[in-house]
Length: 354
Image 1 (cartoon, one colour):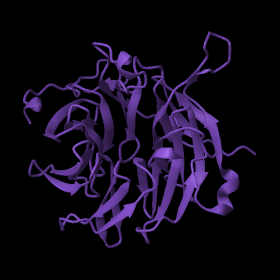
Image 2: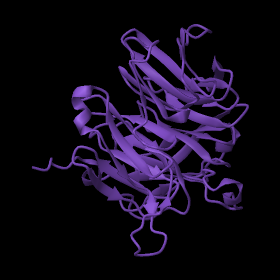
Image 3: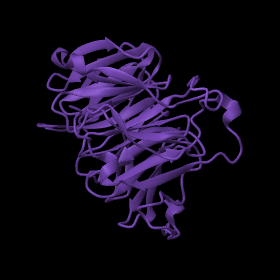
Image 4: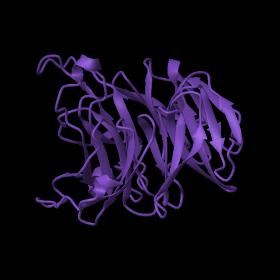
């Protein structure tokens, strides 16, 4: 916990609404995962330095480190429980851990035979359940009052990404499999499809504030697919290119292709963000099929993004994502977490085109 011993906090120098704010005392290695509490502006940050850090974000964007706990290997995913007072993390030590912010204690709550790639909290009518997705090709569901999983579901391949909007749970695995679960029957996939994108799945993210159930898929090939679950909505499925650049200026060839690293849906408006290995981020409206905002490029890949509980703050991590292999890991590579104050016009849906 010592890393937060001093009371350093960032004071916004420019007007907070105009300039994104950097969080002080970031992790010492690449940032894998970001998640805001559902109860307050507490941000959990998972890193390849084996640690989870918790920051408190003040009204003006000033930030203070509050706690830190460790895994025995890189942390790959973080999430919160419904009450927003416990953090759950999954790591390359094949374990998930739970940290209670009221007691300051962490303990192991899940075990797999390979790294835990994703942890997600599921709030069911019967109570809270932790879902863990692993490279051991399984999802396990845990009732944290008991030491063993309440169920284990075999996946067709290693779990790369997973998201939940009860009762929908979507899993993206290696070899482009996507499994869709209706959590009223969590042990059997409701539907299994091949990704609508031709290349490896990097991220899946469920729609928020949507009349029809669905999800977005991002791939390593600079492309995003919007996919509805039910056949009756399939005419609204589409994909689009993003996170691409021209080989030479003004050539319009878009031949430099970058991975889409994360997709975050706005909790209120149902619009979404994409971020990529090219260091850029965009906000999109899937219904109007339009881009709402483009951010200025960052000095490194964007590895993770998240909105806070009411969508007023957008957090993003700039760090090396190994997209260029070992040669890209240059000394002094930027590693930071930034906070953006969302303006209404950036995140609100556009009127539907007539």
